[in-house]
Image (cartoon, rainbow, N blue to C red; front, side):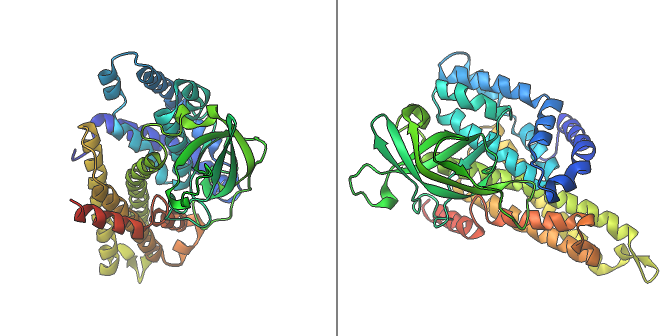
Length: 405
């Protein structure tokens, strides 16, 4: 894939119109007044029929889980990665935080349930998350684990008859303060004395309001303020076996593997998010360079300004090519290696941060003012080098993959 198709371009134009008419006018309320983004997310789903598409996708996935229907045909019908990434790119031009909330709710929480859950669990929780009728959170990170999310996990689940008793805490949980459904990872404490790092990882589905489950208020953050983030505390939360994802302690692809697969998916998403940020920063910078005058001429006439714009365009082309390569690979069923996925995430996140910072520099004092938007995009971009695996962890993953070939 070397360019967008005509169909892709039509979708881009439609999403861009929606962003301009429905999101930009309320952006300050979402970014600065603490208004949760969920209603505008649902409006987008309804406007583009994404809720109905989600229901159709749910039925196909449920049928496959139950062994019904043409599985090969159904798999092809849900494989248009380009169509799924376009809203991510376009939304990130104005609010990367909304994309984060949407991706975690429908993608990570809903996607994990749809992949690992039993048919009953898919119907109980999966459909509502896929359609955004309910909001989901994906809770794995803890205060003392960070990049060592699996090894350093301390949240425990103890068997008690037909139930599990869960204790611990999670932090930096996207949608945590408002989530209706929480996909939560915990270590099995079976009393065997196994070292904490080596214990089995279980995946549970919890509901808002369960006794012992506390969802703390939103954290105050540097950026992505449109994506509520918070802590989740668990004090003797009792979860029946029906809440154990897959209905077993050893589901295929569950536990540790489920978390690792989701990290890989997030990395591709970060590249699409980065592309949206870069495209918007470049657009704003070009317009500003033409309009802003110094010493009687537009600043676009100055060589250093031209250099900044040229470097932004180089970054845009590189990240776009990475996104196109990912789309093409997905369409042909070619999986990315860990080195490829991590390299894509590492480069694109760095590029987004660098371009946004250069946009602020080009705008000068105005770039430091919220009114001009590049200030927000720079703050929002910074976390791309942290979540879904820090830059340092991407470097380790790339090197490990290369050395083990």
